[in-house]
Length: 639
Image (cartoon, rainbow, N blue to C red; front, top):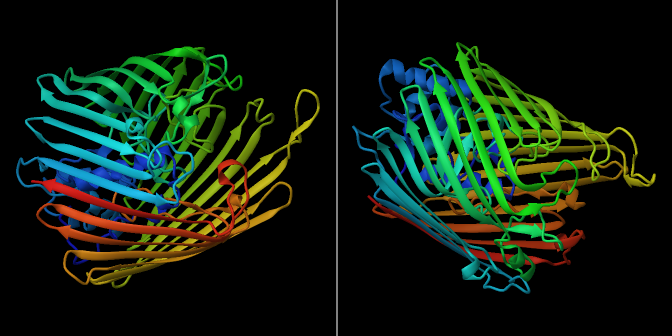
């Protein structure tokens, strides 16, 4: 497969299709996690040109700090251009970790060639056994994505996704077409798209992994991004128009008309969005149960220096009323939200923030201050305040609950390179939910700590460690209006330690081992623990043919101590199964690379549990549970 031009003489490339520990430790198998995998996978197949990449695009790549992004742009401005991605090792502020983070997603393109392929297509199919009982469709899972390259400023794409148990007619279909640089029209897009705005208080700020240094990167301005994810909730469907009024002023108009899956009560009111596959009779009732028409605009200003300012406003109308689950949830059939965002840089100091207001007067505020006195270090402090009832369905929260409502908090991030080949990052977050609700009738406070360390070892080795602790407590016993206790008060402490070591044996083999331990102290005094031990091997003895294999052994006392075995055994395929009980999981993948057009990969995975942990609802299992999955994928690239 074609990829970024890389100089491997000094630093071995990142092991194929693996993400840094800082990301894999936080990605979960949810909608935003899938969006992150899809976004990074698309960039890997369509790498950025280092001589044209913007600061926003640099920061969209995991584990790249604002200070490192500034160093890249300053070097490019001073030297004129990059001649090889390996120059990332030598620029002021460059390092092996920066090179390893960027290498899979960047390249150098000659002259004015846009470098876009005329067409690229991914086709993936998988079948899981045993099939879910009562599903209306076949157990086959299918995914395909087609991208037509940019010629004359025009590109287009489509996506089709069918989940296991879904009928074909209930599958997800998405498409877009885009034209750029037509007079004063910078961009016009029709179809499915995402709006990434400011700090995410009005619209999403891009797919992120929660709880690490990269996830709290500052945002600036607004971007219209084609939808390339199989997430069926987080996108708009309609038309977006971006106009350049001058070198400093720009405007964006957008309109959307689409349906959502939704939970609807007996009175016909919506009680929430439904995310998931339509693989049961119950879920089919929720499909297209809610419709929204949305219109809005963004006005932006960029100074000749390094300052930006913008205003975003939208109005959405639903075809049925929302019934609030509590007094802090959105209610009604229409919503108006607006915000002011800004970012500024002055030497080693940069600041960003966004202030948002929603119809009804609820507010949200997020401020960020970054200090990067030397390119080998960075300190970022962020403060958030989400007032009651700021429950914007199109926003993305930052903090303990991932929502933009009922939370205050402050976080501090430190990222340093104390020596060549060593990277240390630390995130501390203090949060509170100061306004009680009917479901959570007392203030909840807590702190979380995450420390990541990575060291490059001789001969292509790497050692990565991660420690995280989250402590939360309820200060007093909870009671409802009748004096009945509804929740056990006390402190919950969740500790997790993960270590990963890998070694690359030239271009023929790469081996790695991972160990993780979890301990959860619950309010009632119960202690739940879990351990996982796994190993990977990658062999490329025959040209253009490689084998990847993994074996993981796990043991947990309960679901609260579940462990996530992050595996991306097919490029672009998010497989992050939660492991609990006692058992083993393994997979094997064969991949055949054809330089002229792409690659084909075949994967088989299986989970066997000797004993299972009983839990409510869908987590209820029986002893001896086993499931196997076989998948095949082809990437077709036409120059």
